Image (cartoon, rainbow, N blue to C red; front, side, top):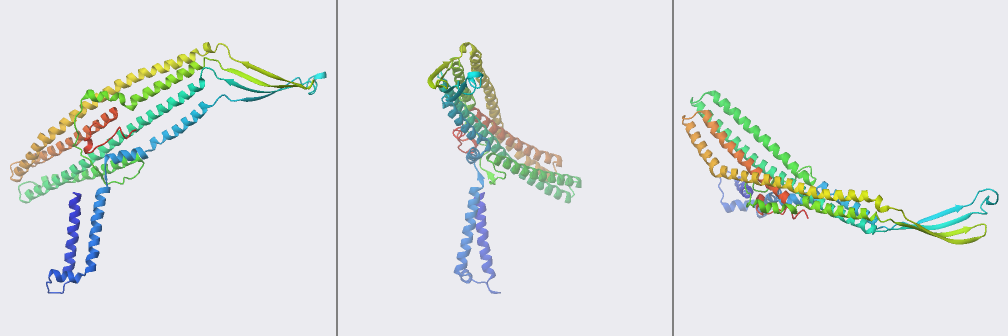
Amino acid sequence: MQTRNIVATLLSGSLSIFNWAKSTAPPNTVPSTSARFKRIGFRKLILIGLILCGQFSLAQAEATNNALTLNTALKRALEQNPSLKVFDFRNIALGGQLETANLKPAYELGLETENFSGSDELSGFDGAELTVSLSSVLEMGDKRAARQGIVSNGRSVLDAQRQVESLALLGEVTRRYVDVLTAQEQVSLAKEADELASQTLNIVAKRANAGATPDAEVKRAQAAASQAHLTLLSTQQQLEYLKVSLAALWGETSPNFAKIDGDLFHFGADVEFEMLYAKVEKNPAIQIFAAEERLKEAEVRLAKTQSRADISWSVGVRRFQESDNSALVAGFSMPLFSSKRNSGAVSTALAQRNEIFVQKEVALLNMHTQLFRAFHNRKQAILTVKELQNTIIPVLEEALKETQAAYQRGRYGYLEYVSARQELLSARRTLIESASSALTYGAEIEQLTAEPLSAEQYGESTELSGSVQ
């Protein structure tokens, strides 16, 4: 279609040149072709040729740049969607937590004064004792490594969450892409319905002028033509909204594409259900449970390290004002029965870790149900599409031709003619809806398995899961 438009532009431009050259000839003369081109002039020909070349290049560029492919849409969404940018900040936050986890216990500087401002010989500071000390804590049970393990495993969970969000985003892009592709087909069908309604109105009007049908049928045909045109306008408006909705996934408020490329009726090769379900365990939504399990194991290790009591130590110098002497002081302390007091925290951490195993099993069961539903619904939708394409629609097209011919000869009434037309349009509408359902269920299968369903899906090669990494 785009190539035909470009050729038509070139032919139209050439015809304009010829007509303009002809108009420059003197009155009552028919100049030869060579004389006309001599009159135009060599420079003018060059200028016109450049204009035509520019029109051809512009038309070719528009044909190339205004069509959006699914791969381009997926790439734009991954690069520009605002919802994925939060993970950069979460990663920075984990970096800060790791810095904190790497810190050793802080040193404390202490100053203590005793035996001052008392009574008699202890009045003032003459009998005071002044102590300057440095203290800290010796961490026992490898607590520092346990803290580092929590941050490290937290980063693994964050990476899995990013993949889950990315996969969900790619699935949403694919679904909206299919919606736009469906709307494009619906606009084409609405245009065909509008043309059929106009054609019907012309046929009914001719029969009414010949006195073969009442004027009431003409009015009914006029109303049907108006309704078909309104349906076309509504479908075109819906297409524009869906394009805006698709562009919003990469942060644009107005789409910079005129249409999208793809084949609504191309589904690729089928894959066995068992092969698809075997890929479900590789889904980031399942892998995130493995990352959370490792995180909970790290939390259990940290809780167990708290059962080992830390040793507090201090060392310093004490000054005796009364004797003008100094002496070293040192000490240490540790809490008693730490293991018993920490048993509750260990039990809590173990219970939270075991809960992850159950959640993983529940998630696998739910995903099996979703995959089974999507797999069989897609299969049924593809079967419906093939039956409509190969059997139902060809029969209805022949029936419409025969009914129209019979109506023009007066053998059928207006109702039979309109019914045949509506049956054909309804079948084509069902064809579009079934094809859209098949692609939508295919996108759901891709999201559940984290892999493209087929290299031929959507009429082009897409790498859904590869884009998530």
